[in-house]
Image 1 (cartoon, one colour):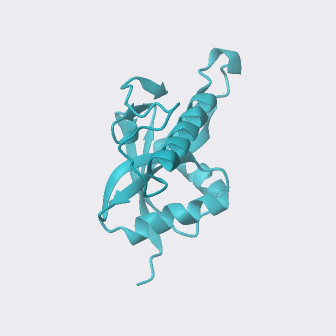
Image 2 (tube, rainbow, N blue to C red; image 1 turned 90 degrees about the vertical axis):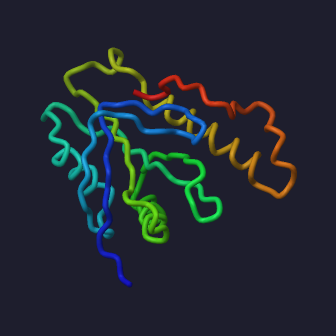
Length: 167
């Protein structure tokens, strides 16, 4: 079956929390819509502000994809990564198409206010990149081989903080 569209769920004006399941998007502002799977990142970055109706002096700084990690065919944990270029979209859509239990491609939009100088805004990029590095390195160390995964990797915070890590 040829899939031409995907359901997308965008969280915005919210936070990303570190939970037992990994990075979790939390927001009262959620918009769902369909996109063509051939969409480019540039087109997606133009479409999202239209769909969520952000003010003209604001723009999307980053889109983060909540990527499920499967165990026995069901999402077990999540990681997330910042969509940086068009090749990042292909695996995102492939995960969605190959797992019928997923109702949406989940994205978190960080919104930048052009009228607010950068030093007055929360530096969200470093927090997200730190989180992504932590999860990537911990997941590989903890689950990357068949050795005893009951021991926690040294130097990795694998317990949830339940504190907002990204606003």
